[in-house]
Length: 236
Image (cartoon, rainbow, N blue to C red; front, side, top):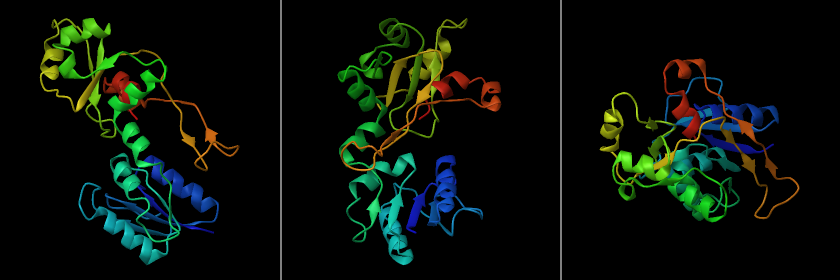
């Protein structure tokens, strides 16, 4: 049995991992920035947001207090911070996260798209607002309706679908005027969206590595809200 510290347990990913680890007989301390109800592991703690200067010290204190063996971060906002400090916890504590450089690339949607395009992976045409002119110029350049989204994930918040509608693009232009280069723009790609969660057991590829391709789904509530396309298209 190992002793785990798991972040983001109020979210679907975190709560699912708690159940899986408990089913395998492990001891779990769950933490989150939100107040935590019962049923999340063997112990629970509320921590500060990851952009607070003392956040890492809070995690280090919990690791020491509870004798943690393995730390698994699950919240998007903390991944770069934890990756950069992954060797700064108590000796022998394993932090399940990649090196800082690939984490920073994956954390920024524009860097991710650039990396994929350079590697020959087909991606929707994309760019930064400052390089694309007006919203109409951007639609002409990228070849159709646009999806705009924050480069750094906000748990799916802020995503917009911009298209030429019966208002002659007035709404799209109004949204476009609020954007800077902390946002990215891509051509809207219709159809089903897939995600490929992977787990690598070591630094090199091995037989125990797992990669699963899943089709994303959208709740009926989201569909009724009229933003199902943008949510399905862009959430990470």
